[in-house]
Amino acid sequence: STQQNLKCSPSGVRRSYGPERWSNMAAMFSPALHRQRHQFVIDFVKQHKPKKVVDLGCSECSLLKKLRFHREIELLVGLDVNGAKILLVCFFRYGLAPISTDYLQPTYDQLCIELYQGSVTQEDARLRGFDLVTAIELIEHLTLADVGLFSAVLFGYMTPVAVIVSTPNSEFNPLLPGLRGFRHSDHKFEWTRAEFRSWALKVCLDYGYEVAFTGVGQAPQGQQESVGFCSQIGVFHRIGGRNGCNMLLDDDADDVFSYTLVSKCVRNPSGSILNMQNHSIKYPSLRDNNTLRRVLVSEVLYSAEKLKDRWLEEKTGNRDGTQCQTEEGRDEFLSELCMEMEEQQTGGLISNIFNWKQ
Image (tube, rainbow, N blue to C red; front, side, top):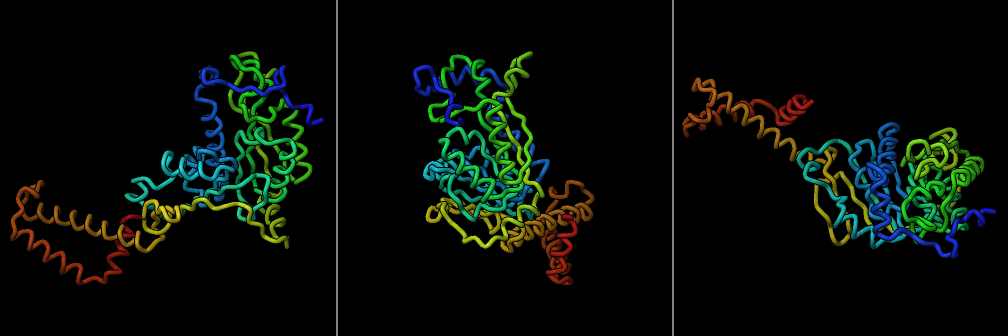
């Protein structure tokens, strides 16, 4: 039975790594194992370019922090049962807020980041129909009863186009120095490759997906085939792709909202920083008129400065014309510039600036 698939230490107590054991494990892999798992997701995003992505069990939001730089993503969602940890860790330590370049070089790309508190065993209509859902080292923290609920919610209700699930491979555990029992004290089980495959294939049969198996964290030379990867990964694709997903979303079921919105960050209006009242962050985007106006003014000033330098060079014959400026010369230049601008509609000048940038 599935219950018998649980692996416990001889005493029946699930043990985990102490700090020194984790350091021993970290020394086995380069890059570190968690970085390899994140890179796997990033490579998938680069290849498939999903617009809507949700990370289940986002915890400290380290994966979200990396994914927010991928411009193809328009909606990035994190879900974790610990809402307070999401808010404090993400915004004040890991920083999902805009960085300087978001303001200095705004683009037409839009990004909305939403963080929810809730359980992956509960349905919420706001997370239906995404292009990609990731569950990285999550499933082993669920009870066996919750695994069934999780499968139904993720594949049967949320119906994403693609899903990436990673979980520890228990066959690799004997190679981990000093490990007795499970890799973490909160793990409820750790599957062998056969057990993971059995669960994944049943999910595909029940909910209309196909799956490919891979992993990260290679075994020492000569042992890869016998023990597999340290973290095993299943990559699920919905049969029928986006069309298959849309058909299921057209049902008449009532919308359910089980999660609590902890934070919402939008890269769209002109940029204000963290608002402590509603925990919102606004990312600058050229689709917002205020941001666009500010960028255009900067372009006008930059173009005027270039015109001034060229005019001074022509008048003085000195390539470093700024060394020969006089009040009379500056006034003459500004007069000519104003006359030139008066001859054009403001909109026409703005249009020209856009053409120069493109």
